[in-house]
Image 1 (cartoon, rainbow, N blue to C red):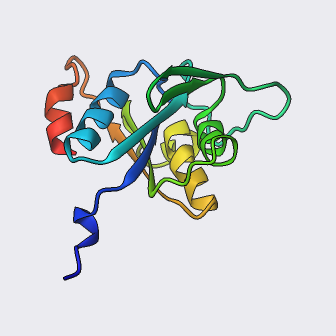
Image 2 (cartoon, helix red, strand yellow):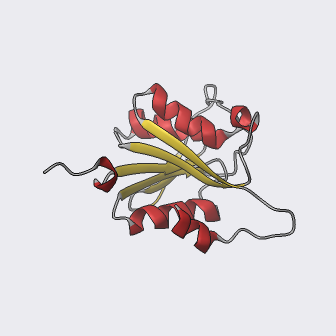
Length: 150
């Protein structure tokens, strides 16, 4: 009996452009773990919003180990994907980027580091997707609701 692909447990690499401490990244990790997937987190050490598809080429990158399958990198989201694939030898089934605090709509996708991480994954033959949380002025994102919507 064939198992539908959406039921298969996968190895997911999570990143974003809001940084390793972002609530949206924690929400995404919790949702993926709740579904039983193997989750590896490698996200920028600090916020890299609107960095586009920039790669660090003229300075060293530092990997900071934060726990089991959880690291930060002193680089961009695209750097994180490259470091995972080429530096750590990971070959995840998917790179899932986000959930960022803000929308990626229209021309935003060109300057979004979150979208760049998903795009970088596809350059290396890995499926990628990016999630953002649209903001309404005056309302705080409901990350619990977001987690259960993923």
